[in-house]
Length: 157
Image: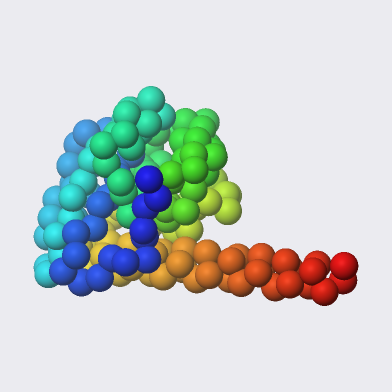
């Protein structure tokens, strides 16, 4: 059950998993996603790691948006769980932040940070597309590296 994240194009359905603990703020982000023109977006909302894993049984997201209001330890646990899961390790993660002044969680799995204030549907769509493009490039480069490394190891033997 591998998710194909590199096949989302304008007009295709984007599957977005929203993670957070504040239903009011998540509904605001959900409304912004619904306002994106020319793009069908299916969403699921999860409130903790357990509900994320339940959603993944029936929903294959192309993107994961995590609200940083869940707390630093919960955010770290969520990102680590998603990075370790074989079905979600290649899915781009964007963290939605309240402020640019608070310290961000640094992780190689988090591809982008987005401020919630003044968030527009176009900004959200551009961020999703850019993180998708970046993750696709990362995967391509990793596969090319593995292929070259294998060729080099065979040539040495």
